[in-house]
Length: 140
Image 1 (cartoon, one colour):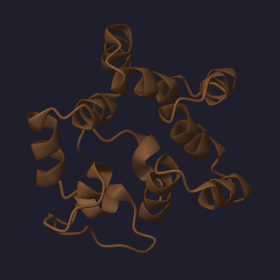
Image 2: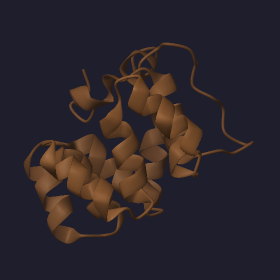
Image 3: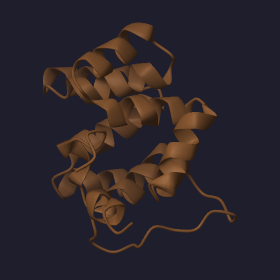
């Protein structure tokens, strides 16, 4: 197994696609995540959109790695260090990709994880359905 893919990313791929929808502002999908047992995914999406309440919820509920991801996306050096020190290497890569770092983008593309990069006609798609990101990664 790739050490950059911690257990947190063993959510079904459809959950991460839903996450992307919530980051884009789809409140209906946010409600679906909440009702179907993924409140932390919904909270992360809202934190990324700037909700301090969502960030506080992540901290209160011990999703420190997700709160740190949000801060790292905003280029918080302490958050990057915390993620790296706590072996959340995938989240470091994801934060770098969100900030446009080409090496991180290339890594995600090389692992067939382009769904984490958002919509683009020019990118191939990872197999959808109930497959997890880890399963998609192991198809190489």
